[in-house]
Length: 537
Ligand code: PEP
Ligand code: MG
Image (cartoon, rainbow, N blue to C red):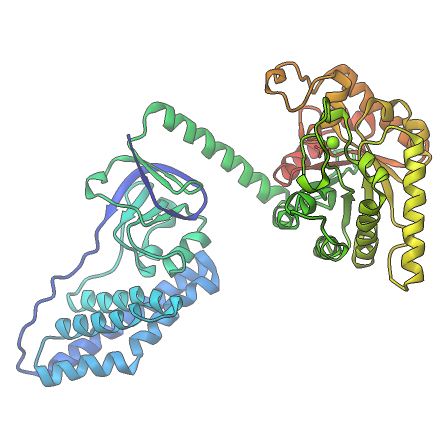
């Protein structure tokens, strides 16, 4: 087994036989001709054939990879008709009395070199196109037809691949591309992406690989030749998972999150920073159920300003365009330490000075965040959520502070949502046991099973030695979840889960039987959970 690295231009896994592709390059010789007019006719005829072939390639590409990607063949047709190219070829035949093949090859090389030396990356990538065009005309002069046949599904390994070569390969037989040359901006790379083909460039290729078994790992930019049994097994599994995921994506995007009997569950995503929004969109989450606002504090060496926070919250709210965005207020402390907070050493940080406890004792920090959140609420559908609650008193105090901040904003004439939804995380046993009372004070509950499990079971979630005893399915945890949902419903508010357990599809049916209203999971779990819900009665 040997590993080679390259630059991945499309993610994915391919396993199959390697076909080393060598161009049918003509050995172009210079010969002296006596009849330049006849030679020019030969050139025109070959050019006509090349042009017709480009038309056919355009039609094939249009069907297979869409108009944008097919347009490269229109560009080739135009380059083929370009005066600089044609005049240079004809001039060489006429004045140097050389054969058409030689005139085309020399002209193609010169123009290709000119492109290769250009500053602009787009034009540099056209160097390969120019070579492709001249080789096509030379092939026609030699009477060649340009089909490439693959007998079995193959990983194509080549020095370089021109767009026309890429598109001529039978898509059903093609598993991946690996090339030594090429750039991620080249059309071949663009075509590979649009064909959903794993592809690597910049790999030190070897002719001796022809016919051998290979694995293309488009995630890590690796080519593995003759993998051992373990590696093959690992990649087969990865490929299976990938296929399953892709199928899910295809099937479930845009579909409702609803059980067979018609019960709807809101399926949201958890994010930690605005950049995670791409994953939210790609996986079709219906909203954001937990935006951990700590990133603003952790990624800084000073307290983030109201303006910085406002911009981040507004961006998320605007991107979600009216869909719900639940932003959790600062949950610093315990495992999330920030120097400038000067939290100091604690014997039991998980049960220490953290989250809402800090916000209620250092109210300026809290008020700055609340002002930013409320201001951003004028730009989308924002809700606020408070972490680590253990008493009704805390909630009453929070609501007082929020009221004060709202009055301030109103006095300043700043717009915000006066009816903004406010909810709490249920992640302490105390909050579970008094959830009937708490439900009367807030608009929703979101169960933080990560912390709830550690506090219910008295098992530190950070301690790797306890990995085997942290039983997330513990009956006490499940009972707590059931109780919280029931108490929420008794007071007419909704309850969801935003801890990792929400994505555990072996429990989806149980959560539904408890009456769960919402699940908020990591973006990559949105579609698997949607499937699990749709499979339930
Ligand atoms: C939780 O505790 O379940 C939770 C979602 O919050 P975090 O993981 O950020 O503590
Ligand atoms: Mg938590």
